[in-house]
Image (tube, rainbow, N blue to C red; front, top):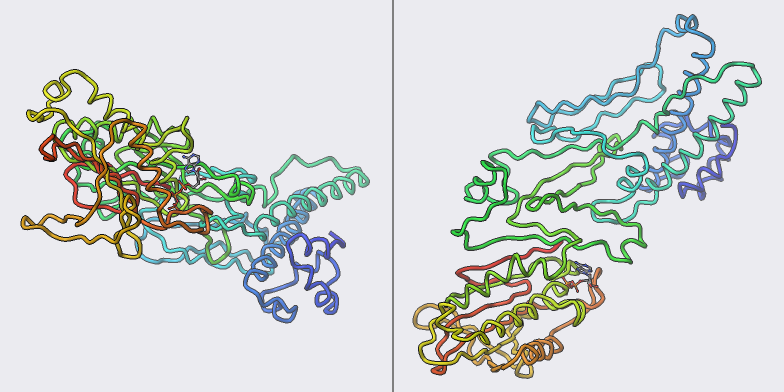
Length: 489
Ligand SMILES: Nc1ncnc2c1ncn2[C@@H]1O[C@H](COP(=O)(O)OP(=O)(O)OP(=O)(O)O)[C@@H](O)[C@H]1O
């Protein structure tokens, strides 16, 4: 660890400070171990990110020095232990999860070290349980190099890589020295950095913890009791989650996937955290839903479990709503419209089923549909809510108004309804209407729909009476008597 200070500073993106380091006589990597945080301003390191990077680098150098020291002590034999009264205990963060309060974790103070291990001030709660060190160094590197929002953090990325490289260099130098001295190679020991893996804590569900299904929900209690994700017929609103894979551009940017679609009803969100002593750890949140679809699921899988039962419901004279909700770029359009004609979305799959059902002989009576007045017609309307205003997408974006009728039911006055007689016609109407939607570019989606869209498919008898209705929302919800909420993440 004699030189390569510039090289190391360069690796962590701090090379611009090298002249100040040199001016203050810091020319070797080993000199960094003398630095304290009070020295940072004198070196011109004011920026918070740069301070963090420098801190990590200094800790690394100290770790390597400690390792060298203990290696040498081992080489010299146990008798030398008596010479140094301060045998350094292994670094150990004792996290006390029994307290509810904001009791601070106190790291073991090392009398030999020339720095004080800053106590972590992460609030301790009995909802957080350390589970295991799940990440290898490489995984930790991936995890820790990103903020929870996925922004790459150069310092952390560089840290582990550079540090490893230096550990290897130092180790090879040490072993050479040992060989020269004729000493035996000590048993392989893991370096401090190699031992440094992100702790994962899972947030446990407690009565006051209300993520996911309400604890009062029948599904929740059934699941709790039987351990199964059974769905009771009485459940009228189901909430499902679809997780999309990282996009190519996200992968290119090296972003981390922080969501895991667990079992069929569970989602895990891995929240990257950093304690004040800059220790990285991961807080895992568990969320429960009626159904969880992983990135491996197709639109067909989702349709079968979500929208298909709704179609059966409308043929029994009911009203149903399918509401796709999620932040921009989460995959609502992908689910609802599909990505290509060969990979249809929920609209198309539903349209096929509706017309297939209508084509069945005695569709009305056989299916339980109330259609004593003869054949049933399929009518479509399509409008959007943009900046608080309603626009008819099937009528040249005509401005619409929501009004309450005598029964207190909200009606969209002036909304155009188009009768369709085939699947192709229905899809053509939807795709024609979609072209009129307000679009824009968002941070994560270059072709982002900037409005809330609402497709309604009405089944009417020849007296124009409504005998069944399905609504297909993207982002917007209305009163519904039965429905599916597909959240996207
Ligand atoms: N499950 C998925 N599998 C593969 N790619 C997906 C998936 N979900 C979304 N994508 C892709 O992600 C990108 C954004 O998806 P999409 O346009 O559907 O998002 P959105 O939620 O409708 O966004 P916005 O609200 O901005 O319109 C698209 O390129 C889409 O193909």
